Length: 130
Image (cartoon, rainbow, N blue to C red; front, side, top):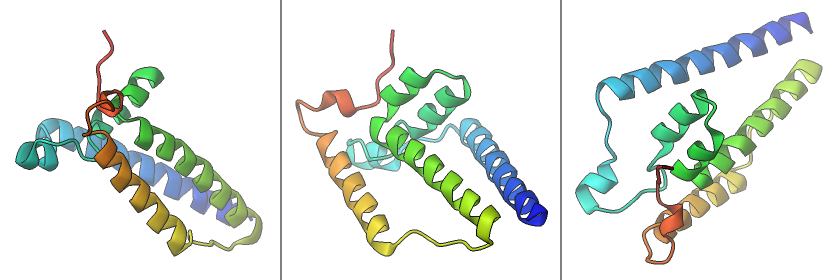
């Protein structure tokens, strides 16, 4: 059981470090959304980089305003990951998410992308609080 705890901690810390490295790299290259650049529309991920930067600065409401759907999805994903880690530490088994759940998430992201580009749903677009 101690070995499984160490493995879970190692994987968690590695993923956090990888996220920080990716964020710094995206900051260096001044990453821009390809959908916004090519088509002039907001994709489902627009504002996610700024959202994560705001989360690291503990500006949770600003992070939510950058991308509300991904913010909620991230919170649910963290809870799911904690459950998976708990079950792994307890039993030594890992059960991946079902394919149906992944398809539902992809469909919801697509619907969210459409909605945030429709007039009247401007509140879903990335916004900066003043």
